[in-house]
Length: 87
Image (tube, rainbow, N blue to C red; front, top):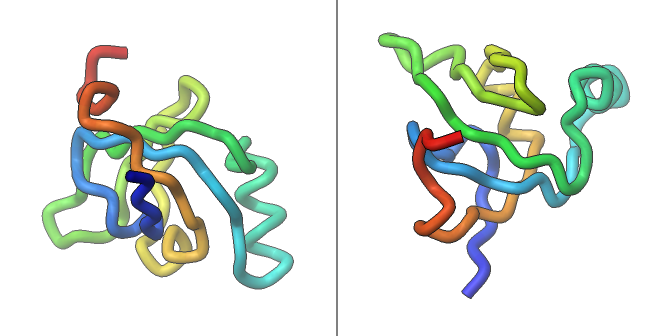
């Protein structure tokens, strides 16, 4: 069963694959510049102590994104067998 979530709901150590990117044109363009497009796999590496921002591993780069912004990314949760930090 496929489970869809917004990226801001992804827990530490879990992976998801981008389904769509919404929001204002400026934020969509920023995500595209960072390589966050449909099909991109993202790993949640760390959530800051106060919960914002969150660090994600995206195409080999560690990128911090505010929760407010990551709520614009709809993703498919990867299966449990693929989750973890064994990249």
